[in-house]
Length: 108
Length: 194
View 1 (tube, chains in turn blue, cyan):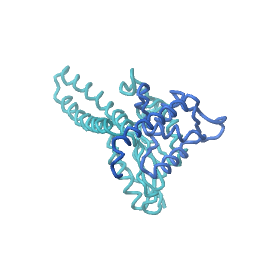
View 2 (cartoon, chains in turn red, yellow):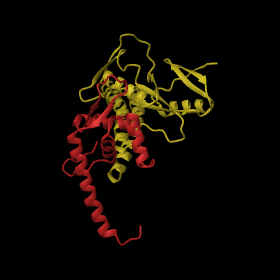
View 3 (cartoon, one colour):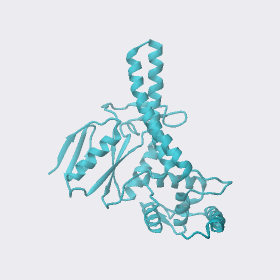
View 4 (cartoon, helix red, strand yellow):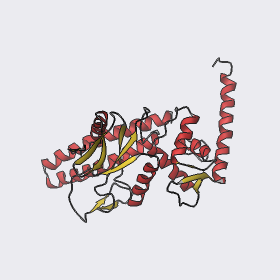
């Protein structure tokens, strides 16, 4: 995954997964969350989700949730992950601010 | 009434995928796979859709974890061999699997290089690798075995001065170029959008 730590820009998939895990979710629920929130615009394939979850686990931005007795693995965001998500929100705000300033006059 | 078909697709993943989807369109869903055999049972035409995935480069744990992950998502997953090999206790070194290579045996991913993933058809498109970076990585995993074979065969062709090896090397080169083109296309697109 292409997550520029310095630039702070997350991929859309990364950001959406982090957002979905503010409440603990398993894989299928994450896919549903992304589909509902984007009205199906962002396509999240199972293989891509699997790779993204493993990368996020490795970075410790998310962690496994529950005792692991249930067959379905669920995940939840860590404080570190929340900090990253917050930084991303600020970056996006600044970006839309610039865009508004320049394009604001345009009828959208 | 079940139906058994015998087919061998080798490394032609797209052909195999298309054939399985055609069977599903005609009202047959997969219930089991053998080396050459595919067992089907009747279903509603178009009730399920199929997608193939390559896992030959994964470790046993990783492959099993991925398999379980897909099943948890509600898909039905079958293992499938990519080559025809009836050995027991086979040990094979896969230099292309990761940095330094990986050993594959009958109890790991040897003869289990592919996953056939079945989804109940909900009318929405079905893809496993959706992000451009992931797609590029997936094509890279598919290219590397052919690239290794190409290098090896070219070496033999030069070393033995043999045309036969050269022809095989050329065949591999075609596949390497095919996947390389897919990788580059995905990477170029990834520079502009996600």
